[in-house]
Each structure stands twice: as structure tokens, then as C-alpha cells.
Length: 382
Image (tube, rainbow, N blue to C red):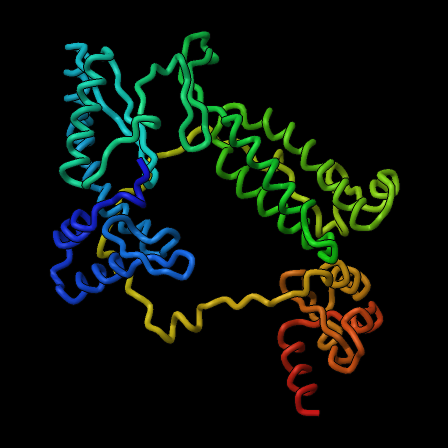
């Protein structure tokens, strides 16, 4: 179902009203939902759905679909005594998993007719409570032996260590294709002036994020090995094109062990460096009222992390200066890293004819944030 476009405004307000008895707040939510959408300069009214990309949209979606969670929860047996009784009678049992508007219902010891009846119950519940219809193309009934995809994973039956058939969670083919495309976009298909180190940092973020999500898959180690090979040669091609050098020269200059980089502290992350994790303990139960409190506005301001902006081509220059300065601040001598240091122009950029002249290694020095702020203040005072 196209959930975010089709969700009923009445359903949202009705679900919120059950917990929040504040007419001003409810009116504010109603105004947000009815604000309209601008298409080609024309504002169109919104009679249903939530703003695409809006910060409140996922929260409003979960407020409504929380009703579905409790509906499905009521269909299953959970305590040991009830589960034993259900198992002895060979009766069906229900489990479910949901992430935003993607969800699966898992049934045991049932036939297809039971599954179809439950699907119709869910269809009627969503239509009445949420004002939604199930998507005919996305909703299907299948058996685990045939396999199915959910949230990037492929779930099917495989042979376990004991030789018996067990459920297997694998990385889906579409997820593998998508991460290769993302690596191409993060490392290779970039503006020519963007430095190698900036591309490595961006590509490493993609690799670490993807690996930590899919590390629970049974075939993660096998997939990681193949993806590391792909990422390696994507990066080689990007470096060769950026520096206009041959593959052999690229490997001599940028090879660090089994990966590539501009320095041993600035290398491309590897999928295989993430340890697989097939077993998880149950999460701790939610404990409201544990003494936590909301931060005041001034506390939020103090805790806000401000990120330094870098020119797209100065990343490699910063690393060269950092290595040359021995990972020490030139101002106070404190030990720094790439994350705790700034690349400072000794002579300010505005005194040069262009940025290329200012970005000479002899005009770059490594400073800690404190020394950098002090020098910036001195430069402005001159």
C-alpha cells in the first residue's frame, strides 16, 4: 500500500486524540496535514496522506499503525502455557514484524485457507481503522520454503548444522545490487575536484552502515568478501581517473594491506571487517519514568555538534599536512587526529588571486580547534 500518500487524516487525529487531550496541539497537527503541496508553482490541497519527507511523517505513521500491531498481537499466543496448549491442539499461531509501512505476518501450523481469512480480517481492519487498502501487488501469501524478501533480506528454508531444515536469513540480491550502485555514486561518480580522501570517507560510511545492518544474515561473510572485491576496484578506477595515473601506479601509491587509502589512518573500510552477529538477546523492556527529563533549549544548543565545512578538494591536502606535522598542532603541540584537527591556511585565502594558489601545501598547517579559533580571530582583527 502507498501508505504515506493514502493514510487517512481522520485516522491520524483519532489515534492522537486517544493519548493527547490538547485541542491546540490537535489543531496544529491538522494544519500540518492540510497545508497542501506545491507542484510546478501551484499549491494543491491535501485531503489525505502525510508530507513526504516531513520530520513528523514517520511518527504519525507509527501512531496509526500501532493499531495494527495490537490487532495482530491479539491473534497470537505468547506465554509458555498458552503456547503449549496451542501446540498440543496443533492450532495456528501468529507472529509479525513491522518496520514503518513494511510488515510481515508469520503463521505456523495453518493451511492456506486460514491465511486467506486472516488477510481479509487485516484488510477490513485497515480499511475501517486507518482508511487504508492493502496493495494487491505487494500483498501475497507464500510458504517459507519458496522464500520471500523483507527489508532487504531473503528469508527461506536451509539446512542447519544438525542437518535439519531451519529458517535462513540471507542478504537479498537487490540489496547487493543497490549497495554497489551506492558505492559507485559515493566514490566514482563524483565531481572531478573532489579529493580522494573525501571519497574514501563517504564510501566507508556506506560500507559500515550497510554491513552493520546486514551482519545478521547467515551469508553475510560470503557476500562481504565479494563486495570488498567490487569496492576495491571501484575505488581503483576512481583514483586512476582522479589522479590520471595507471592501475599499477595507483596500487603502488595507495595500497594499504587489503584496502586502499591516502594514509594508514585514512583508508577505505572493508565489509569483511564487520563481525557477523547471528544471535541477539531480547531487548530490555521499556521502563517509563526512570528519572530522565527533557533538555532545555540552552542545553540543546550547548550539546549541538557543529561540523566544520571543507572544500571538496582539500581533503587530501589536509592529510598531507597532518602527516607532515606528525599529527601535532603547530600552535600548541597537542596530539591530534583528522577528526580533532583543522587544516588552516597560514596566509588567508582572501589574499590570493584564487583558491588554487592558496591551497599550496606550504601554506597549510595543522591546528587544533582552539588554536584555529584564536588564529581566525587574529586574522579578522588585522
